[in-house]
Length: 445
Image (spheres, rainbow, N blue to C red):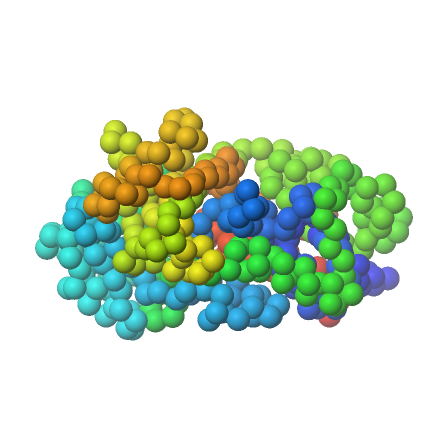
């Protein structure tokens, strides 16, 4: 007897993975019910209301290579040109701060990198040659390693200079993997470099959201699901999940609602609880090995006329000097309603958070005043520090990440922690949601 088709699907978790799964399922004709325990969609990439101000819980940069994210944004009606500022790949430090100025032109690879190196300021010839050797070797290896190791080991193996590590590789590693290079996966780092330094033209572009993160996709995804006959329930925590083997392998949620299939798109701890109830104890136990890293974003409001020369700068962080910030963004150049607001990002921010919010905000303000040569930046009108304590998993070498399939019929996983060559990014979350949905919709064909 043929297995019944999947028609009704519950998606548990309204982060980017859950929203992506819900959209893909709705596009395939499924009736989707999206459950989110919080009152806002987006998970760890969402907008929050702080004292009447709409802020993101963290500053994000997307890449032009984020094909699935961009595809689904278009599918739910987002105008990508209006929604994001498109910039060429770059690593630019404030003038006089001891950094560098590196901008990749939109040319075919690897010509784009060669031109960028020739034009780069702040790098010695030895630094430029080291970067060129690394890039050409990585391309020759197809950006893959036979055996994973730490990013620090990889950089040492290929004789990268101390200055290049400080100004290029370390900040890129922290920004992309949210894990220090001494313990970050070199293989995952190479995958990120493949789609940035190794990509060309639009694929290597850096995309800075002009919309808040909830408006950038999750809110539009919810509207799309509802327009296809589905429903979105906020403040709705799913407390139980049970298989109904006698009803064609359907699933019961919360005691009385029954669905043909379920996507679990929650963080690993909550997913483990549901998997234990569903009858997958081994898979549930395997989710307990993840370690987590925080990300802190410090918002500083200045008079509306206050601007940076560029939309964002890289910053040299130095804990001994109290310089914690790694990137600063001029929010007013992205959204005119936020004129005079800067956001400063601190990845892997555990040590920085120990200072306390007020002290950290002042240290960041002092850092901006120092490196930008603008004393007035030490006295912001208003500050807000937002920390996501479990922003991402620690992306360590050889980390075992679960597949989307759970081994149980019509029950799949979605989340940025599932198997992927990417770290915990918006794109990996979206890819995971799409993959989970397609495992279920294959049964409709």
